[in-house]
Length: 440
Image 1 (cartoon, rainbow, N blue to C red):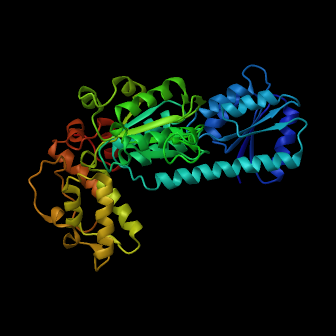
Image 2 (image 1 turned 180 degrees about the vertical axis):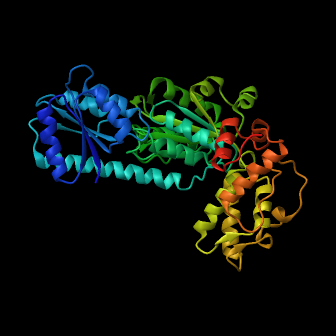
Image 3 (image 1 turned 30 degrees about the vertical axis):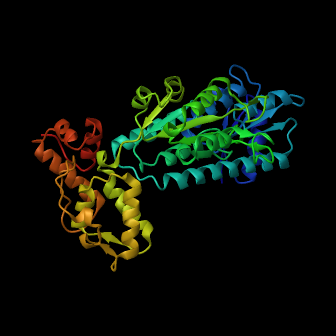
């Protein structure tokens, strides 16, 4: 069953609530104040927090606000006195799931806590679905995930930069599902897929009669995303005119539908993405500099696959396991997969592995199964000069041999070996110690 943290300065009240919830099968922890609750949150990782609003020192509202800023926070149910509806609404705006009014009814308590626990389970499942497709071994991508965990709970605008196929939309969904806005669906649009006039109507909506064919009111994506997240993919392909209108949304937090004289307030978080260099676009006068600074509050750069070679074997094994019929990869085939530049990044690798799964006759991927461009010997520069171990593909063994080869080439100096593999010294040191490798 779910874990519940009860926060109340009255021991008798905590005891009553604890007894009711334990009888229903919950694992229950107690805290007498916000300071103790903060410690329990760190140590016990509860699924639901049940907190009184009025307590000595820091109150329940402050606790609700603190919890909302945590990555993947628990659901919060607040307990308020009869007639304090406005306070409960404020708690809801800060991120509380629901509220209960004193005196508490045991049946309603069980119902509300149960619904909160179900909501927490749904959120974790959505996160699992997104993260299950994100196979990360490289320190550079782990740094990206760490940054996401820090920025997701906020409302700050995020600009994701990366080449095509690196998974920018997946990163956007990860940000959304780790934010307090996760319970409302994220809206998304590819700005490059629409001409200027159609993109504007898709974003801002329109009133009946605004133009020929406008037979009724249409709610735009920005308005539909109020209270949630709007993902603007390929934002650099938006016209300068539409950029100006988007800038107003970011500044004024309001929109005006096409054909309307009234403004509509919106509470939307913008996550934008591009595969272009926006500073170069600014110099060409195809992208507004003021919009760039509004979007670039939290920049996230996704490195291309060719710069994080550690992820390739793990991704290959992941796609093999997902194929349903492939079981292993021949060492020479893996060597060729690791040597290739992957200009289409993870999307290209996934497509290649799917093609192999459909067309191959056996359950082991061999060099003959690879596309011609991967089998051909290439003189393209690459930062992956290592060889895979002989005798089969085992990622742990492969990783140990890779680290050992790097140490050997660096004459036993870890800092030099780390540079050969594009790792930080601390990451290399941690991995080397895991396999019992030591600096000479």
